[in-house]
Length: 467
Image (cartoon, rainbow, N blue to C red; front, top):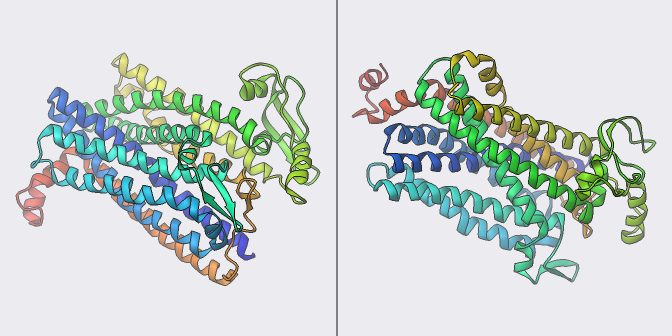
């Protein structure tokens, strides 16, 4: 494979892996802040134990997530230097703000939160975890501001073949950002909720620390139902925004080769023949694509062939149709996973409200355990659809991916770094899974006992605390 394809594979691999950790950090920080607030308000020690136990998982995830994120910025210079030169004067500002303000904010107050349990007042300590949660959300905002520029460039001027920012306010009020940001943050809250909900379900299935995990499960499901519905509503708005700003992505996500009739049907599944640019079989729901696009049961949607002709006239000769199968199916996997999370979280809230969180719900607890994977499936396929659907552009309408790659690197160099990065990430992933499983198996009170041991390095004292 050539340098371009290897660079794309490397960036996809590292980005997808890194994005396993980001929503977990954002979601867990928010839920832990809620739990500690309940401890401060109600004064019940159990909520403090909840904040500490889930905080262990948050800290493990945060530490490994930071390491995986470092490689992201390196790759801009390593494999995408032409892109970095082109967009650096725009990209630099939000990335700098994220590092100097948001990341330092969350890192500083994580330290205070870890070491301040017995040194700070309850309220001050609670404020620390809320500032951590705010910091994670702010980090996401600035990263998404940069990504939104790639989806819909605003607030810039071209100078000597390079994009230079001339309107910072336009950059942070980009319509793409105003929809992408809440969609991502709500999805992160949902990720944290289903992680806590799934682990709590496992513990309830085992009848371990039942009261503790009933409360954890209830909080997680309440956050889950609100977040899942919010994700769906904002996602609907995003689809309508795509019709205006990136119609080719919208058409590819629907495998729509020809401009649709009015009203337009929504394709549930299709056999896609990209070579002949047609679908050989479809399952459709009448009127639904018009509703998805315009919130009414009328209106046509432009097809890829018509848009290809328009783009050739506007941007010059080239293939402007993205990988259709990938865009089409990633969108459907995302929607399917999101729909299941709405159903499961609603049922979880129902059980909690009716005080039916008992062991007779074994089937649901088993489902919830496996449902930990659902937000990761939705997050990953959502980003695949977002990024693949923009191809062949790196910056939509301004710079193609083929023009973004570093001109001086060789395929051998990229292949070597790809192998090294994937190997390192596999090790980090294994370490994280091991630490998660070990912490979860110990449970909240065994972890607490070890922490309160007078000498945690004394083996006999450790065994006594565990026993």
